[in-house]
Image (cartoon, rainbow, N blue to C red; front, side, top):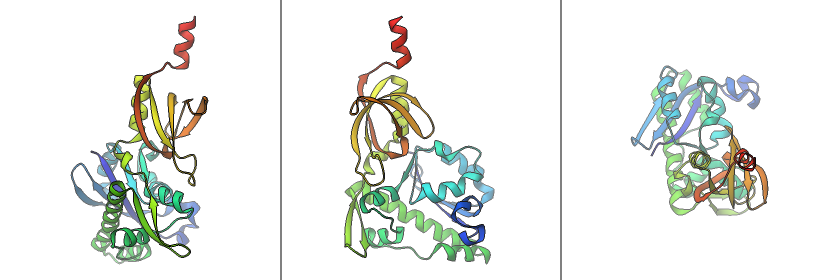
Length: 263
């Protein structure tokens, strides 16, 4: 089981780099991870990123909170290959899909786990500048632990909780249990074996996943094209919108294989 939970702290804040459009300029002080395979937490500084890169490349799935819109864009300039090739589970997505808006990790953790963050990201930036590296690492790894524990709870119970201003305390359905085998790995296996795959696919962030049987024709880093039996036609699917995937055992032929057989 090569799942990896990740969180990072930056050297600068948005106001210092011209806003969120320059996220890649924030810099990194520490990257914290939890590796399921070894059951270990570790904080990496820049001089250790070569080792971190190897760990990420070997992972089956990368798990985080708001990781697609923050951690990955910040970290990618430090890597020698695109992190978009990784299978990623962003816990924020199911929460936003259920609520229609985003809430903080602290809100979810306090409501679900009765445990919260020990500080704020801006404080971590100041601690780093003051040379308090150990304090930053401790803070980052606490967020990693909260993220892991939230993931484990949602995977086990099928929901997480939060507090909202309009609706009070609410339970939000999540679909993390099916992510124990990365969907990308299942899709690649289906294409290689020419076997149809059943996916649970969320067309956008506001709709619940629907089950579809698909024959995969081609795959890229972010999408795949295939024949959708539900829609009875070819479709292009976003891989990061798949919350579950299983092989059906039903074989199919690629289009060029069909054409050759007709000659």
